[in-house]
Length: 348
Image (cartoon, rainbow, N blue to C red; front, side, top):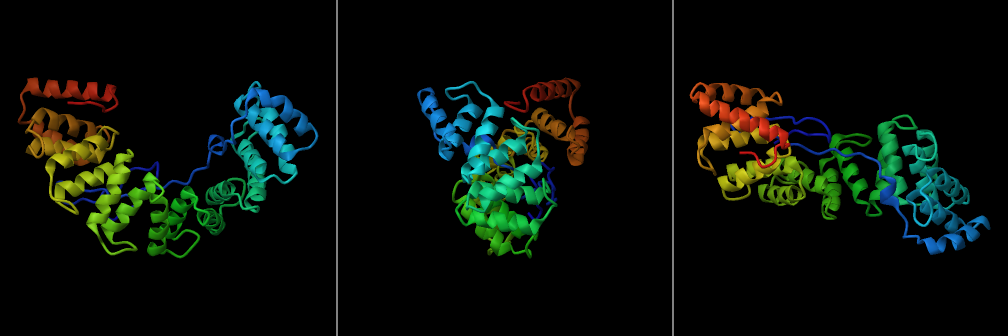
């Protein structure tokens, strides 16, 4: 297992015999949404008092009134009014208002989308120590949104947020060290930051940490530790973790060999559309490993993987088809159509 998967990209597969494993690291550099930056609840009864205070120049009241308009708490939802009040508070130096105003510009809510303006306001909040603003500012630099792309600047701001315990920033900082982006490549530092995020329950960090242990990157190779972290991520629904956990059980790496457990985790990943898991699940049915031998279900899963351009699945399906009756082939094809219609859930 020695390849990296960036979030949203396709699996990179390292073949290991008939059953193979995708060792993938999830990549997630994404902005916080305004919903993740919500303030305390504002009730309709507080609106009149807030408005009076806001109109007198109270920055906190202006910010809370902006929040009320943004989410329709006690007033009709109105993004333009939210921007108006966030701006008044932000111009008085209130960091949370500056952060929220950055979000409004970044998302084009209540104002035309304007990444440069978003960066301006994130920067003001970040310079006051706002961890979420520091994280989002890192994202803007990493992606060249509103500023020239600058990995070193991204690392700077991720570090500030990460040192405040912000899990998303810790995860992204791990990625930057692991990939040598904005800093010299340093697997030990990547493991450090993945661990901090993983211990806060970040599923992608848990998965990536599993990959690091499985491959001995930044830590001594330790299959049991890899299984531990894959399991945590798999239980949160990370398909690549589910696949890799299935592989570990199938091959007795870090756990006793257990084909039934391998089938369980391959199935969970296959039901999320993971072509490699679908292929390996077909293998398990064909060989009767962890499940009763079943050519129809082997064909089903190979057919689904082949439909995603997995070449070996297409080859196996073709060879199997030569040994099947027309009735069994028809049944398997019908099951495949039904499975696709159900988005891979509860197939076979």
